[in-house]
Length: 382
Image (cartoon, rainbow, N blue to C red):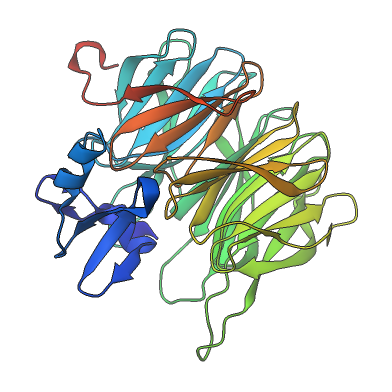
């Protein structure tokens, strides 16, 4: 999926679509409202024309792709892959207050609200051979406080109670099936304290801070044209040992945990479903939840027990009721593969890669209340 970022055509960021797009004859399209396509590489209507028709603004800046929220400070952080910045937004005023430049392409983010530290994995070279770095940012002043050598294709999660930082990735990139590593870092001094090998192709990570269990999503690619279900490895955070492997769906893309119910949710891109894991028994519970063809990023509100799943192909954020593990709502149109939620303010944040903005949704009504543009902000770059 890393290749999605490095394609820019006619000043329009289009790389993300190559990872998960609809192919129609001689052109590709991004579904928008009423199933109309924003098309390029041929076709009858360009992205710029269609975006104008629907009141959307395309931009070659930013490439807003990932988002995290600090519920204690009500600050929202958006990773902009194209402009190599982290946008900082004030959730009280719904305004952008800073852009933090990154040395590499910001990929994944995690936050510890208790220490007010933001962790950003930076992709340094687009060739899958050069190690990433982890940027540590002080949320009180938006200053960089550390950059740490990491592994290839790093993804990150944090145990807010122990202040341990977990990083997955590969030591080298030599083939399709790669044995991944899990590094454990002390968030107090940013030093690595442990490392262990995990499953094939680690592709996502989440932590249940209440049980001190770490969940690593392992993506299995087709072998001899036969698709195989992927797995979730369960790591005991007190011993740094693997205690279980749980089979999930095909081509998974996202993982999230509700630490109150100890349920783990996995979006299966290839199967258009969400698998639900019981974290107490380490087993699948119920039937997979059928959603849509482009589901990836996920977020959980542990207070309301709602799970949000972003679908970039159908321009939808699906809402799952964690009490019944059923879909109860669809929010349209949201052009994103990622989502975050602030459980304190009951606000949902959805960044748009193509339109370089972030939509704000009221969790009570599921209405889009604001759309904030995330263009260049030269006056307050930290």
